[in-house]
Length: 115
Image 1: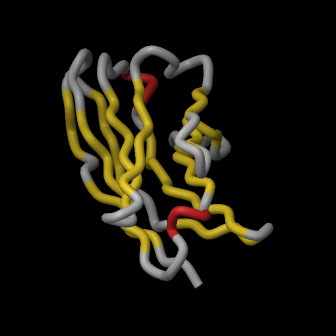
Image 2: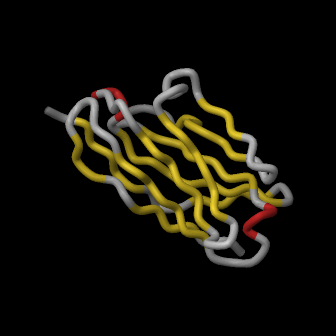
């Protein structure tokens, strides 16, 4: 079993930054592919960033160059550094772990971008 707890969301002005964290419980964190998704009001949940077990990251086109995903296997934590925030980045951000074909989700952290 893997439990995920996100934190770090909040209200930020356009152009601002936040660092989202996702703390995982359970063993073998380093074996998990970790993802960040987001879901804006009235929209479907979409993939924002992925970091593989070897540390290779990938991003949605909409956040490329602004968001950075990283992981600390010793702390069992994955991060999403979000910069240059835009109004359209407002969403609940969810942490996701995939291991051996099983997917786990956190409950999300809300990021609101508003002036």
